[in-house]
Image (tube, rainbow over all chains, first blue to last red; front, side, top):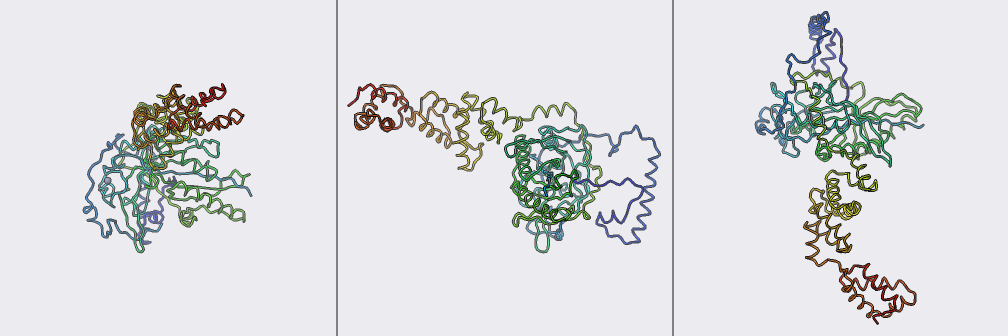
Length: 101
Length: 479
Ligand SMILES: [Zn+2]
């Protein structure tokens, strides 16, 4: 398992994140988004002024746990339905630009 | 220079569930492309994952079998992933709160045994399969959403042999626990290797080379032999190993570079908002613990002690859970542990490999084997007759006593019947009688052979020999 780095900073490097997300942004766009994201982070940063020592960290707003599904088979989509939205298909496969690893 | 090799393995195991991990599509192999899929498998906007309870149970049971700590609280995370075989552009995996932490696996290598530490076990989803063409690639999503368990070892393996032994032992545990089909041809077990070298006198780990996507144990062994040699070549010439990811080509027997550290992925893990955390109670964990089967290594040791078997035999008999169950059932009925083991170790395993079938397809029952052993011990049949009956049992099943009666294979042991054959043998071969009496004791074996021939193999050879000797030594000839 490779671990990703998690940045704990008040700054988001927009051009780096755009690169990770395969987004091609113009320099002017990077400037706009950089400013906007800095504002948002500043706003979120207000949370650090609160005393959260006695609050459990959570990733969810709802106190729900263990939402399981039983291991039962349900119907799939038909192959024709599946391929309906595909711009390009051949031999039952979705055809995509050549994948280079 | 001498180097110390450190190998760690990340093993991906497809779990044996009926349905996929997030949806009710069937989890199976070999269907026509893109037929076992739904909006969840395809990552359609708005489609939500729903966690398969059985996938969690199998992961926790694996952790219990490997002595891991089962975490009371676990959660799923998204890992950014930009390949067309994963249409969501992220893979749901576990980052900082996996189901299992720690654990170990005992491996047997070169006659010794070694304990290998496990780092963690987590659950994630498999991705689709891509097929590469000249100008484009094709994607089949049938595999997408197969529950995939990742078992991460510490970098404690020190040779290709140890890596091979680790995978062999791990597969055995997975089969014992009924965790996975364990079919390598179908990609049920795949692994990523990391391997680094450092001078013997150094404590600092060398640069880590990763070899991705291995799907045979033999390939793992071969690629490591190659990779270690390659790295030694570089280091001995004063070179430096770059941290990089390589791929193995089984046909050419070479590894080649996929990407260097500068291109290493920044996965940007974050908590999966569509799945709730999992909290396991100690009652649930205890219930799963009570249901885990005896581990292969424990069973091997127990067979050696309880049934007095040599280590080697115990190892073979416990290499497969069904085989071990068969042996144990027959041994318990018969009480003659060694004889039961001998029949299985020789004739039965030979037959299985000859026919290319598994123990589950065999016709003989443990009861029949125990009965056959009993017939031999009681001197009701001799060994050649027992072999004939065993062959029939393997091919068609049935009851040994019934087959013996049907084929007239019962051994003749009563002295009156034996004496008839003995007298005939003596009177037909006066020269052998004379030879014996003049000191050529080998003539006795010939005469026993004659008794066996006259009785069509049914005489008890020991009774025949005793009767012959008595007459020859007493000078009370039949001639
Ligand atoms: Zn599905």
